[in-house]
Amino acid sequence: MHVFEKAPAKINLTLDVLYKRPDQYHEVEMVMTTVDLADRLELIHLNQDVIQIESESKYVPNDERNLAYVAADLIKKTYKINSGVQIKIEKQIPVAAGLAGGSSDAAATLRALNRLWSLNRSLDELAALGAQIGSDVPFCVYNRTGLAQGRGEQITHLPPPPSCWAVLAKPIIGVSTESVYQNLNLQTIKHPNTKAMVAAINNSNYDQMVKYVGNVLEDVTLPLHPEVTQIKTMMKQSGADAVLMSGSGPTVFGLTRQQSRADRIYNSLKGFCQDVFVVRLLG
Ligand code: ATP
Image (tube, rainbow, N blue to C red; front, side, top):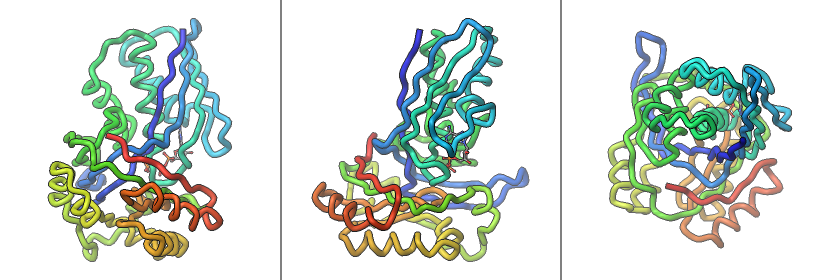
């Protein structure tokens, strides 16, 4: 018995940090959507009580530190499953990139094991489980455009964004999400207009959507990594309608309605960055 599951990357159309909570988490507001760049997972039922991870990526641990392992372990403990699973992960999403690759693998594992082991749990229940793994996991369980609040785990669903293309470009550096949040100065940040972004998506208004993109974490990552600013400039010069860093970076995305312009942006960056992708925004 085996199942396949896709784990799409996410991008932030907005990312705002409101304040630091007594429990040390940051209270955030983020409008996020998924793109058609995805890891591919195959989950194979095992009769023995083990969890095995297989991945060819040298950047991802093949042991209990892998977020897919954490998800499988949580499902097994929560629903008292005595059998095991082998999880093969074909990584397509760059690691430590601000694209939630690890969280999406964890979410895909929850969805896939729900099917493989006929658990018949709702997405809401899987999302609540996912919140125990990481703040971005509930969003990835639903895999659809939404407003994330709280520490990122409270999701309000939104309609799919207006149809458009995104070019993703990641410089060779990796960024630690934790250290970016630690270095954020809450006194000086310029908050994006989350309400206006939500309205733009609800009204399927592309011009308003590109007007209101914003990410407060750029304040930390851009001064540390000039190549991120350089990519932003190159994307703007190649005609992107909006250019923003996703999550804590360093991946930058540029939005455009025309495929020909997406191709032009891609061509301008492909000699400069190791990872460049032309993708569509999904629902
Ligand atoms: P986010 O945007 O949620 O902060 P990210 O895209 O910046 O995520 P990830 O690619 O999820 O970062 O990886 C962050 C860390 O998690 C890496 O150091 C990586 O070793 C570890 N990790 C554990 N499991 C996975 C996995 N299945 N895929 C990718 N990274 C994983």
